Length: 293
Image 1 (tube, helix red, strand yellow):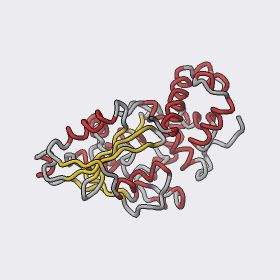
Image 2: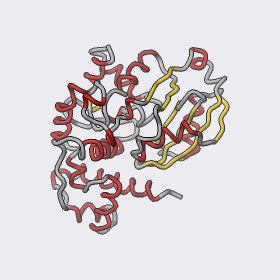
Image 3: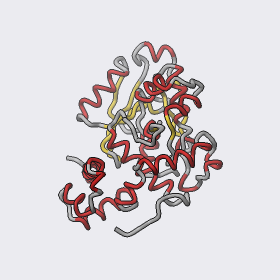
């Protein structure tokens, strides 16, 4: 049975699809709520609990002009320290305490033959995920869209020779805490990833994009030392093995359009709006003002 958090996300995702599909009509709150079979008051309350702000404010974070403004405001500091970005306290950046360790050539080539991998399933604000860990860190985190059996099958394809145990360990708990906006637990989240040197470099560069910030494919290519290699960088982004922790959702088109996402454009919109509501709304003066709807 689905948890309430996942059911709420599905309703929010349906609302985002409806609004983006009817953007020109600028649908009212009553119309949006009706589309997801909820009363306006119930939908407003559920959305406020999920995102921390009203549906109207949330959707302002997803429009092109807002995205362009964030790109302009954060461009100079995307790859600086948390202090230089201006975020501290509750706005602590998870990219500053996520550390990548690449797998050894043997681990990479033999399908994880020597690896013991724990895995578990968990609910997040954006749907259910599967998370897996070795003794060195998180090796896989993916959204479960086709069912738990299929999600586990995809994990086994990555490491066909590993030994698997369905078990929630401390590494997984630390990693999952970021979905609850809990930045106090881990001093550092360890990632133990299978990837080429090029992919690892792109993923490491992605970690330097601050929560609430955005960047473009071209800028990411330049900052990773591969200027002009936008297509190759895009491929590396698409092969990110740990959703959300390595924030490929923060890469958008230079036009300000949100663009595609391995886990779906609607989920990308939801994550960007959720992060903006938390990290920008209370921190930066250029965030959209609160209003009553």
